[in-house]
Length: 223
Image (cartoon, rainbow, N blue to C red; front, side, top):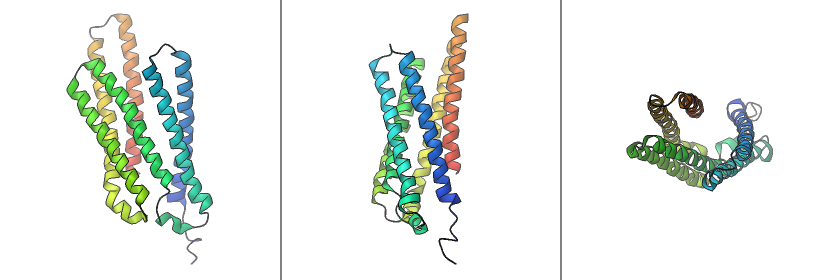
């Protein structure tokens, strides 16, 4: 049987295409959020504004890289099923690197907020260590990925590290969420009535935001 006609693209190219489409949609959401932020909070510090624009730039680079990877498989190597067993497009490993920087930036910001709320240096240091480990692990995977020649040996050697990075990311999100919620609830007990309403909104927003990212990390890990 012809290997091309017997090739099932659904679990490989199909999954990649769905992932890229979702990534582009989420980049659109990020762009909208960045625009709303700059129009509603012009008085924020330059450091926070610089963080927002930096995250958006890295998100844009990430979207371009995953799109290039999809183009490599579906256009440049159209009909070449054997391409999937070779080295992954370097753009996909570049997207992994950008993703690591984005996660470190966002989680670093929430770590700072955690320290601001709690004044507990130990917790903030623990989260910072996990952020650093995830970032370094992502850099190692990206560098090794640029050098790979075949997918199977690379997956066998570095697959466990890839899995560990998702576990660390999900653990970090849950740790940040739990810490923020606990200390916000503690402040709620000594707050005035009007302040309590604001704290309740912050708690709800914290849970919704962090649980979404944690769920995404766990779903990716499972898949």
